Picture 1: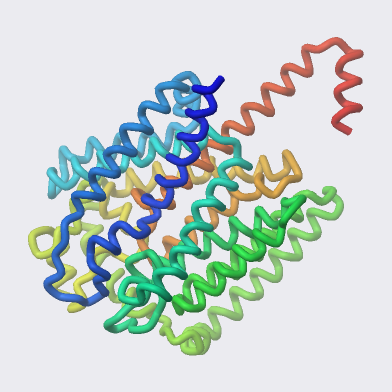
Picture 2 (picture 1 turned 90 degrees about the vertical axis):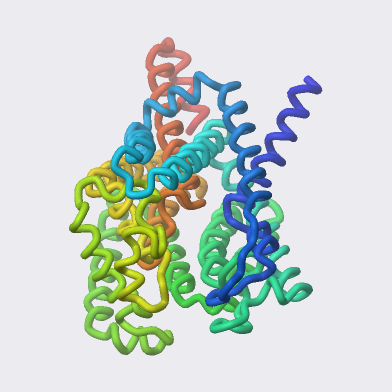
Length: 433
């Protein structure tokens, strides 16, 4: 019993710590000495971070082995994810940088296993609560860094004065706080006691987005909060649900048409342009390179090698020397071709269907969150690269697997109830209302 409690406490602490590491907080910022975008000649060792991640990988594999039966079942129910991971490893055969592909594939597979561990070890509700603790720490530390250690917590250079908290860039802080805000909103709406704590977390997340001056994060947050309340309409009776969804769809379509007609004015008001700060030009060059290797890509992690790789073509064209295409979907296409992109979209579609099914299954806020995660993944990768290999990928795997687990448990309960005697069935149905 004592050993079991100690393991439980260890796993909780390990999980929170690992999430903060995967979020990219603190460690890289400190190792870089508070380097800023555009700094020239900044060299620093990432060996300490590599050692920490190797330790996390080892512990994750050991903990998965303890629950090997549930782990294997989870693998079977999420085949597209594992096909994509296998493809990333096999892509070393045609990669334009085999050494980089081997390293990046290893990191991808190991970090993906953490997503599986998170899903198999904790329930959906527990996962969201743990994320609340991790992001709560990130919020507190971000304020401490920005106020007490402004060299680290605030940006210099072209973004001087903008807050970045414990992350390397202001946009990183903005993106993380979008996710944080929705987590605390979910916790606040489902809390029976001390909901004010979660509302504070929600409010502080918004404050940090504003201090980071991340317009994309602010737009994404508005969309996600709207989606959160739209999904709650799925709990309505069918007679009310269908008209509500049709009404929301009509409003959304009207808004889209209005946006397309006024996009230059809207982007101007946000301090942007319809070319998305040069991304439109960059994407043109990226497509040029995609069509040279459209089916299998350049190998996972095999394209962006600076002047020494195929990315040199883009560096010649773009003087700001981008290190990613500012689109997670284009990055995946570059890495694993149309084959990899197709596998991802098939898995994503199945995950979306499962997540929507569990929204109807049980009227609880935590069941809404997997769908929110899917939409967030889409939004986060329209103009930034935050898909395969990022912390969003880990959460995508976790909530995809969790949706499958919830549906399987529900199916098992229905079979179990069907096999019970009629008297017991009646008693159970009365108890569950």
